[in-house]
Length: 274
DNA sequence: CTATTTGTTTATCC
DNA sequence: AGGATAAACAAATA
Image 1 (tube, rainbow, N blue to C red):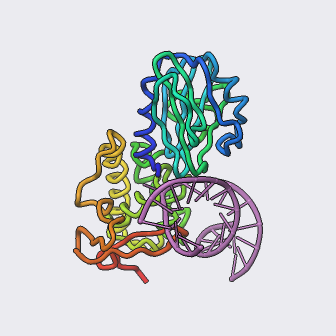
Image 2: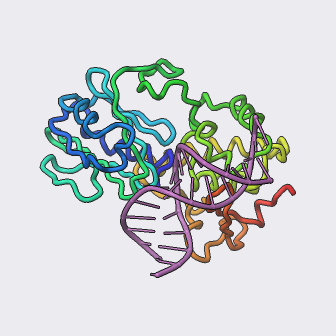
Image 3: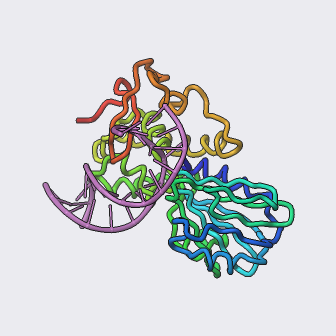
């Protein structure tokens, strides 16, 4: 489920825990989400720590606690964050619960493709902001100013022969972009998902850059804020309906596997170069 | 019962 | 080398 907008939404769900201390950690220790940091070490590191701040980068989340302690979370395909009452009893898919004074912070993930990391120590990002040690050297996010035309051109130059659908899903290039956002960007730019950077006119390259910025920022404004759906003019509102039609051309939408993922596009509006 | 899924990693082949 | 593809992970939903 989560791409950068949904990740930002889930980040805020744990805000009620800011300034509170972890009194108890309830962990489903055998769950696959603890494959990198064992449940035992997560428990040991977080117990007694106060939550100070939270951060998102692409599809990654980081929660900073007292004494330079970090909890990292990747939500995978089905991960969700929410809060419950401190006395809640974790259900089948609620693998990690941080019990605080007034609230319990819950990580639920029924498919268990997500993961958690816990460690101590602090690094700095490009702007001098404190980040967890494993966030050193992360690429700029598409919604940020640092993701500018020069950065965009660099990405295209590095991958002249890659299909754009696959390139947009590359987290080293477009951190936070996932399946539906990639389709939305290509549709808004009127570019066929199997086209390659080398196929694009300079006009299309500009359209792709603008659509990348617009979709990222607008998705954060709608979904990232309170999970409001984007407007009817977006592909988003039509892509999962059976018999869905393109809001621009009115023609039926098509679903094909491109770049290894189900891709929704409008052939009438997104013509391939070759 | 079968097919599908908004993510990532690894192996394999071209 | 760079890119495409399939499989694996797991469980709900149609």
